[in-house]
Image: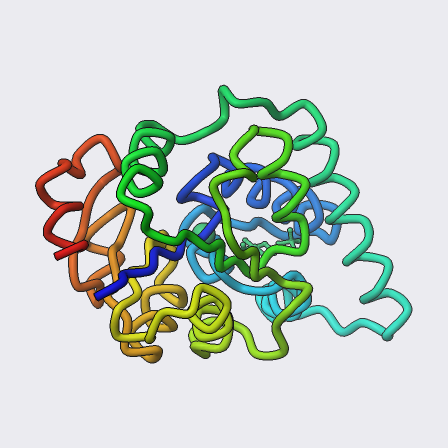
Length: 216
Ligand code: G1P
Ligand code: MG
């Protein structure tokens, strides 16, 4: 039976979660409050709009629609400043090995990300050719933990959801994968990603034997 593999982007393929954090923190500081790394966990896998809503709730700030839209633009402009300098050195450890392994097994690969900046980032780091389908913040109406993003990816790969494997660093992303009846693999802190079917600190810990087991 064909197995499909769906990767989140930020914090799984590339080390961009830190840049999102810095851009959100800058905005929070400008608005007069702190934004901690722990609070940032709530932002992982979440859309830009929803992130700003949460940020303003944290800072107890009311905003007009115009202000809200301006802050969304400002955050993204700050974020883009970080990623224009990006190159393959920002790919997280052993991601290319895993992508190459799956490609050699002819397993279809998709991206399932909340980010609207996904495609240019994959292009910049040179990984775009591995992906048969890119589903990102431009294609979805419902954010993770809703399974929509992964279900669209499964449809595009022509693989049944139960035969898809999702790699995620966000709590909301693991929940989305579970809600889609997919195999969820947490990349990061197992104490945070407690709902994942499997946990790895990073891809260096993921053996070829484990990957073969997923393909079986
Ligand atoms: C959006 C959010 C960001 C979040 C990311 C998840 O990315 O802004 O905070 O971590 O989704 O992938 P954006 O569309 O702004 O690139
Ligand atoms: Mg992520």
